[in-house]
Image (cartoon, rainbow, N blue to C red; front, side, top):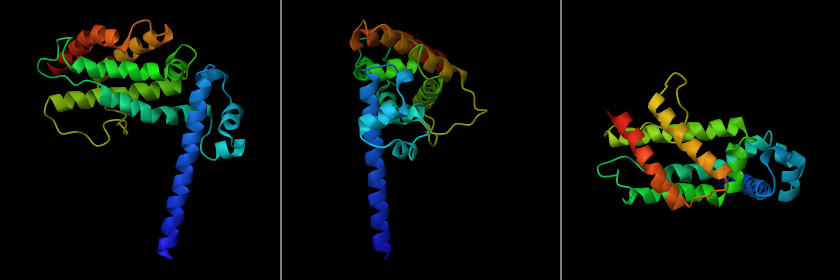
Length: 210
């Protein structure tokens, strides 16, 4: 009987994951066509081929779906961010490649990130992204200083009273530049953005490490 129960649980988990993926794909398609603020639950459900009630079985609203849909992508962006270290101030260094990948990943889903981070975007989702990047920056600095990683540092829960001003400042600057670039239609290539951004990003890291 235990095997049957485990099998049913696994099957249910797979169905939930498939539904989440289907809804996320539908949202990603829709935000390439219109702003997030103009997308309704009915729009997403219709595009995904599910009922409104099925949507509400998993998410409270479109903004919660947007947050969930971008979480995996944000995690990949976080992992692509460069870490400070000896010799990384040179803009020709291979470390700038990781920053270029960060901008390239943003551009790949430009419609989504413009909707989430632009002037008509979602403050809740923008704050979610900012917090995740801030935690990632903090962890990069800890690693560079030879300190052990903190549990859940990249995207995990954070203490409300644990204010890290340098990490928050760095994350805000990076997200600000990325948002400006996206809302202007990505006028420079990811490689150009990396070359322009890395000296500033590196300087912020250097200030934090002092």
